[in-house]
Image (cartoon, rainbow, N blue to C red; front, side, top):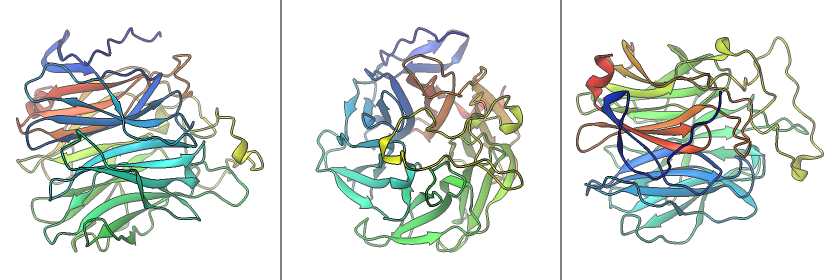
Length: 393
């Protein structure tokens, strides 16, 4: 299977095989583009941020963003928002706070070592036209702090930022087998943060917090074990969480994202696959990167009888699911993109990767579902559909 000739012009076009949807590939000059996150502004502009460079984990990876102006038929040229020649800057996300200050948050790690990651941020007072200085939000000398999913603002003013901790055994390279999740809570608009651990969350990462119509919180997780999407709930504003338990939906150790729609339904984008669908297995996410900083560390062994992070499960299809009962069931599922999902390599230079991954979803002011995700590790693909598009499949 060969890579398609992608037209990364940003132009919105009707899908040739499905006129009910609109597609676009965001403009980029980077070899690799990954990990999209969407945010719509009050004026109707849609923003998308992602990271780009040559390869995930290498220090030339930076955060970028593009804008689809209200009424426009094309996404704007990508703009770089991070700049550290010594760290790989990944997983950016936008947050518009209650004072209409736009934040971009992202991780910054020493090459190939997620256990060195810190969280940085910038602010904009004019909805992204100009940006303030780069500053550090979160760091821990003993473990890496990673983010992926948006901040939730509670009715009492608390900000909830889900994080996951990248932990390696002493003397070993990070492989993901010891990662856990937590929620950072700020009561002073992001000045200070208190951590709340999610109990028994080993292997559960990329926590996505949703506020349900009844005021309770529902969270979904990626699984390092590549088995199922996991879920947890909170009824006290995020101060305590239930132990994550598997849902009926599969997970392949790749990111997911969900959002609560205006009608109370939950829309979820994910890969409808797991390790059961895998014919091969990788050692780790970064097993291709030659990194002098970890030269004195040994590879973590895959040990029979214990849970080990599973890398290499197919990242396909990219699917959209709808739940009408607060996540108890997912009766409506339809594929956005299909393929073999080959992801045994992160090397975009040789165009070997065929994954659809790391999706983002938001319901726009127009009521439609705006979706963005990685396409073959080469581009960010944007798709626009109605909720009924899934239900009429």
